[in-house]
Length: 93
Image (tube, rainbow, N blue to C red; front, side):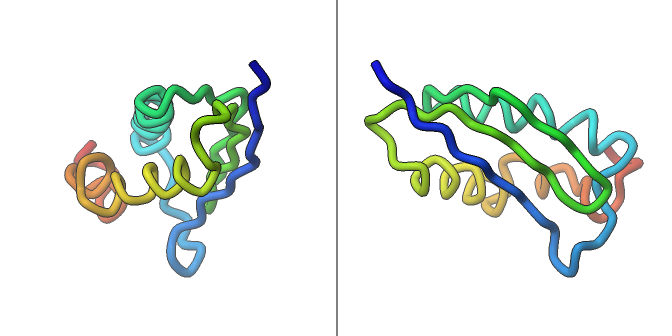
């Protein structure tokens, strides 16, 4: 089976430097779990202070936009980052 790979960059609004400390430790497992739910694998990932870079291996049955939309939507509906308030106050994580 041939997998497609997608390079993804997530950037917080206004490129605020919010991805530090406890948030960095929290986000890695969250992104891996969300990718696993869509049968994907994060091959490579880097967290910077103002963005997240990932290389994701995606099975052919999913479009890259579907997987990225799933991760972004899960984040927006509050099942990941927003539910803990991590981006507004990293010490709460």
